[in-house]
Length: 150
Image (tube, rainbow, N blue to C red; front, side, top):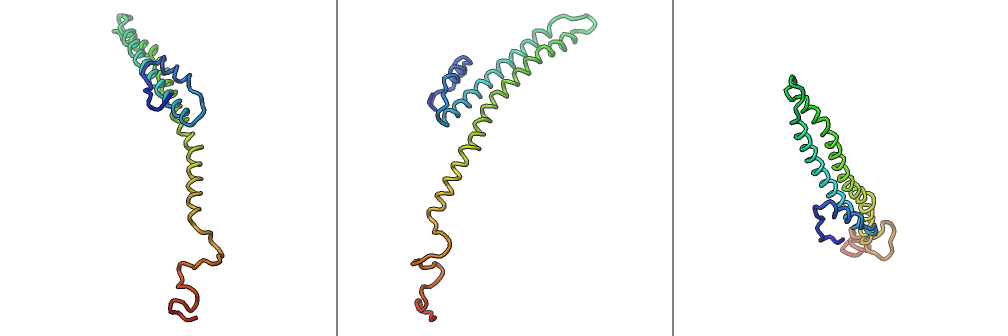
């Protein structure tokens, strides 16, 4: 899967794309996180909408006459609440992919970048301490040079 490929909105296609990923590079981890986030979002939307639909359908059920339908609405919310919990779990699933990649960046990529920056920073500098043949940058030269007598 390349970067330019659309992730898609079909849940079956997303699962096939997720299954096809082989972890060989950091881009594979990024694609895995991106697809897992899309799957979580898709499941969250679908299951959440289904929970609302089930709640609406079951709340229309005629209950006891003396509760004026309130009993059916409460029971419908109890039944659909289980699906809403599942929808939230799908949301957490999608978020876990994003957190996995952020953790990978924090623990593997950032230390490499910092070490490389430290190595580059040290290359241009001269080592502090005693040196032979280098003229110090803050002096005028050897004694007797530059108009100063020693």
